[in-house]
Structures are given as structure tokens and as C-alpha cells.
Length: 388
Image (cartoon, rainbow, N blue to C red; front, side, top):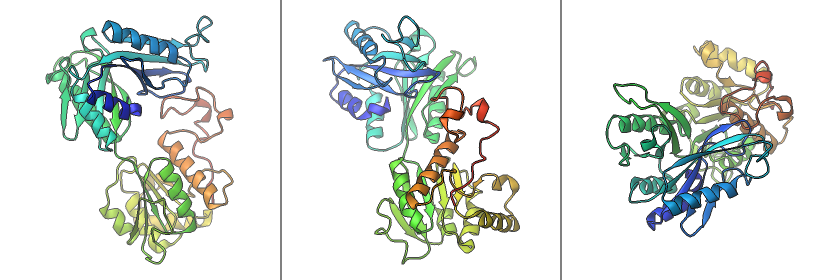
């Protein structure tokens, strides 16, 4: 639902009831991920998309029906078949499970607060029960900072607390996810499927080295939604004028700055300095942090010398295995702009545990579950060479 948070927040503020249709499960190839929503208000206004056009008409009619009848939440499945492929099915061959429910601010007052946090760029999560006992279907819990609020269906009992705890944990990852909960008589007896929508702060990209490649990488990183920091110890090179697409430019020794700044599992660290006096203490620190990606630029000879120096200062083999060096995918990149695409492509593939191979050489669905490496690509994943 957070893909249309602006409009939903306004409708909640105006106390306008609406029907919300959310993708809660995907099988095979489907154009949009779980958590994507369409909403329809009582005047028939629609916002959002869940299929790129294939099933929008049928979902719209279901939303209108639930609004008019004030019906209970219901699930609907749309998939490819001989009968409905071009009527309401997905012509790309996948299947979507969609939960359609009426949202009324009086019944779920906390939802507007969660949407407001998301619109303002502050962390928030909404946990939505998408499968389970009839009375809980569509029930929601909002996590706002260190507190949580559940609607009346969940309340503040054991089930609500379990859902809130898992939603809080998921918010820390910054990723929307479908979770299986319950089945434990002591904490949460009902078995539930809960979709946790997360609105997290932007992930960070830390680029060390004020070099020509940095400007292009900062622009690419910002385009992908990262909060980009450029850091270099040399004030004559580390200026905002040279890197207008960076959110901040820091003059400091790289390892010292990294030791004092906040990082998390989504942070990407890109070391472009080519200078051992900067690289070694920086990478020694970076490889000991729970960040998502650490890459270092340099030739293969530079890479081998770097590995030797890192071993000498005590970096373990397990830590070195996390280092992506030479940085980037083998795209034949030469210019700074091409190299930025090579690096960001590797960051995307690494975050999704994907192979980085051409789709023509990979079997299975194009839009697969994050982290599921195709069978034909597993033995080749991670073998691509760097960009320089």
C-alpha cells in the first residue's frame, strides 16, 4: 500500500472510505511485487496499479463491490488460463493473489498515522493479516517508532503483540515481506500469513574517494534511491561542487568517518580511492561491519596486493569473502558513467542474490522471489570479472 501512500494519507485525512486491493502472493512471472496496491474511493476514483494493466478492470469492479456492499475482506486469484488469459488473467504467465478490503478511518484510525510517517520520510510499518481466521482477515497493526497500535480485531492481546514484534523486526530490514506466524499456543495460537509493508529511511551509499568515477556513481546511486555520502581526506577534491548529486560530502579520513557513522544491512560501501594508506584501514573496518555490500575498485594486480595487505592486518578469510573486488559486473565498462552502471548493477544483483547473468541464459521466472538463484545459474554466480 505504501506505493500510493500520498493519496491514501489524504483520503484518510478526509475520512473518505476506500477499498484497498493489495498483492499478497505472487507465483511465477508477475510484473509487480507483493505489497503493491490499488485503491478505489466511493466516487470511483482509482489510484495505483497491481499488474501493469492485465487485471486492473476486474480488481476495480471487486473494489467497487466491497465498497457498495460494505462487505468483508476477500481474496481473489488472477492467473493465466485458456479461459481467462486475455479477460482478467495475466498474459505474462504468472499468478497473483490479491486481498481486497474496505478501509474506514473509524475502524482503523492508526493507519492514517502510519501513512503520514511514510509520506514524511520517517520509518513506519503496517502489518496486514492476509490469510488466517475469518475474523482476522484484513486486520492491521501499525508500528510507529518504538510504539505500535492494532485495530480492534487484533487488540493488544498475544496475537497483536506477536504481529507487532515481527513487524518491528521487519522494519529494521527496510523490506516489505510476507511472514508466516502463529501456531504456538503459548504466544499466538492462530496461524496467520502477515504482509508487513515497510517505509524505511533511504538506504545509504558511502563512496570513498573523490575521483572522476565518484561523480557518476553518486548520480546513479541517488537515482536508485540511496542517500549518497562522498568521503575523502583531501579538502581540495572533496567539494559539493564536484559532486552535486551527493547528499553530503565529508572531508575526513575514510576509516575514521566509517567508524563514527551509522550503517545497516542495506548500506553499500564503495571504495574508489586506489590508495593503500586509505584503502587498507577502511576495508579492515568495513569488512567487520554488518553492511550489505563492500566493493573496492582496482586492477587485478591491485586486488591481489590489497588482499595480501588485508591478511597482514588480520582480516579473516571469511571477511575477505565479502569483498567485491574488482568492483562491478563485467559489462565492458570504460567511462565513469558506464562504470557506475556496472557497480550499481552488481549492488542490485548482490542485494537480490541474483546471478547477474543475461536473462536469456537464466531459466525460471523473470520476477522471482528475492534471493532465489535460478538452478541453471548457481554454479556460475559470482564469476563475473570487474570493470577495471
